[in-house]
Image (tube, rainbow, N blue to C red; front, side, top):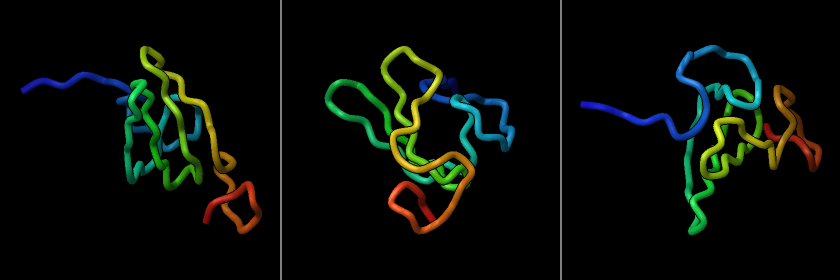
Length: 73
């Protein structure tokens, strides 16, 4: 009946800022409480540390798909 925002933005915009996700496909949490999000349409993996709403891109390039070692497709 209720929810808590733990990462990202609830606005639903399809832009690639550090706090907005576009078609997130998977979420994992590690033992330290860090949240990792596979952000499919932004072509990246976002890291959200406990207490932060702004993510850090740890893999991929926001909005850029491809086959180089830095990009996802």
